[in-house]
Image (cartoon, rainbow, N blue to C red; front, side, top):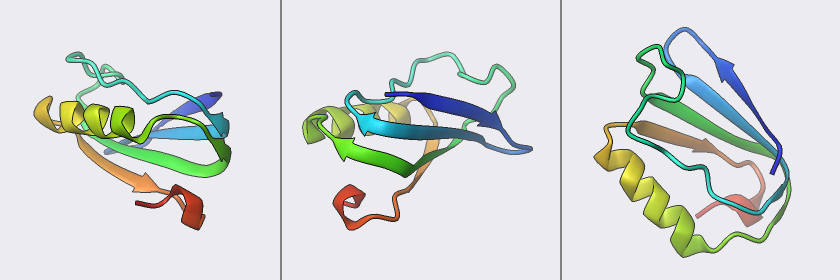
Length: 81
C-alpha cells in the first residue's frame, strides 16, 4: 500500500494509493512530530481493497483512544462505510 504524508498547517494528510492491503497504524507518538493530531485519510487513489474491515475498525478505535481526530475521504462507493 503506497502512501504519501503531507503536513498541512493544522492536520496531517495520509494519501493512500493503489491496493489497500493493510491498515494505517496509529501509535502513541505523533506521526508528524509537530503536535498534529488531526488526520485526513485520503483514499481517492485506492484501486482495490483487500484489508479486513475489523482490522480497520480496531485501528480507528485505537486512534480515537490516543486522541487523534480522523477524517476519511473516500469518493468511491466501495470505500465508504
